[in-house]
Image (tube, rainbow, N blue to C red; front, side, top):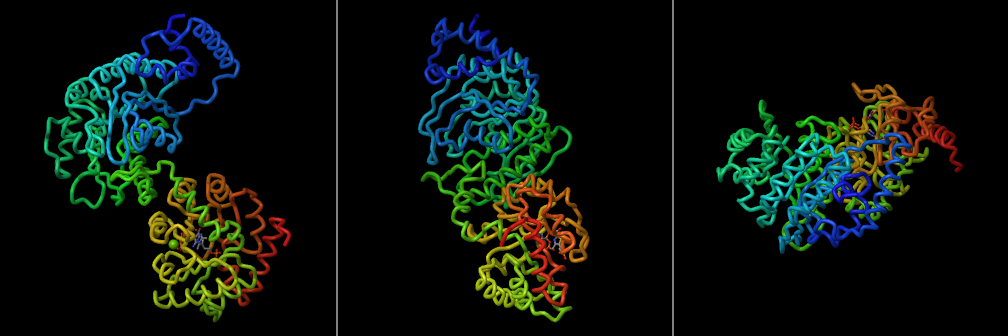
Length: 555
Ligand SMILES: Cc1ncc(COP(=O)(O)OP(=O)(O)O)c(N)n1
Ligand SMILES: Cc1nc(C(=O)O)sc1CCOP(=O)(O)O
Ligand SMILES: [Mg+2]
């Protein structure tokens, strides 16, 4: 069997990959394959094809192929692309165009992969692996751009995202001006989107000055004239801008897309990751505008999450694509502070109800704890800040003496001022990732969520738990949307965080709530069934018994 046939057959890829480290720079055709190994591969291929036929069609997963350079520091390039795709739930294969020796200080060396070997890698992947979208990064030679163009003609894909990488974050040149012409002539006309930063857009436009938002509008239109279906001009380097403003042009409409500018040194690889995320969203079936917006939100969340991590000594650190590095550190150090089983009987106060029954906040909290409340939230909507702070301090003393965490509803300032154990925020309150930054890693943060998407965002943002409701209609919160037991179960099953159910829950239905029996659901949060009562401790005790029975916990 000819070499080309071996490579274009399913499953040859795995065997081929094994010889990659040696063959990478020097491989010439068959030199690394013995005749025997080819015959064995041939047999293997046929066995695998038979197995595939017998097993039916299987599950097709969204697939991005990145054609880019390797970054030894793993902040940018191929490594960033793989991580960004993994974070977005998409498979990522790789064609390496160059190997760079690189860290947080800069680029110490570049070794360009010969174009015939880039062509081989392209064929290996494209001929076999059902790629949906190709994303390009560092294309360091004219030959490599031409080879890519030819491969895409031979093996068409659904989408092409072109990130015209020319200069690294540290200012090192990764693709010289000679590549620009072939870029303009061959790649841009077949691109679904091109994503230059200001310097790259300027270079593609022959050195045009880009200093203002209106310059960016003009650049997006001029670049669109070169053939790509969509253009995203990234304004991250725009001076004097509080937001990160990117200009998106689809040939008809122009959009100014804003996200907050995150102050951090850890921005190395944002361009590669943004383009990979766009490619990943396209591979999953998003429209272009949706994909671009999702990618911007993802980068904003990842930069916010990674703003204070320290990797390397240089000025440009990598960020944490998978939002896990800091979380693990926090989780291990915060375990003392937050135990998900604290959500079991979650008492949420209400100033109106306390007034109605003549209870002070502190008395009501004390009674709830005596009745078995395992965590308390002060939800005091109509109270002066100063009074709220005083009440919080008194309640904190009571809670601390019983080992019960005290959270503050909405008011991160009050939580900080009294050193409460944390906050609970809703979808229109302070974003959880900002609350996390303000409160630090040790405090508890809860977020109200009604959908799996909100639950995922809460996890991204570094929350500790989710409050999901309204499970039933409630008079305590105006115009509250009811999600029912089904909605609660859906959020619980999607959530990586522990969940407490809220809304209209009391003695009559707490059992049914706990009966949905999903591991994420840790308890119920209750306002009126505890506090709109004469004897708060008795009502809490009764609810505690119901919950114990429902979860069959033996005291
Ligand atoms: C445990 C718990 N879950 C949900 C909420 C509701 O928070 P939010 O949506 O911010 O509404 P308000 O409570 O602020 O009216 C909560 N407080 N606690
Ligand atoms: C504060 C609150 N949040 C809700 C949500 O759905 O997020 S429902 C709710 C009110 C819960 O009060 P009660 O126990 O009296 O029904
Ligand atoms: Mg709120």
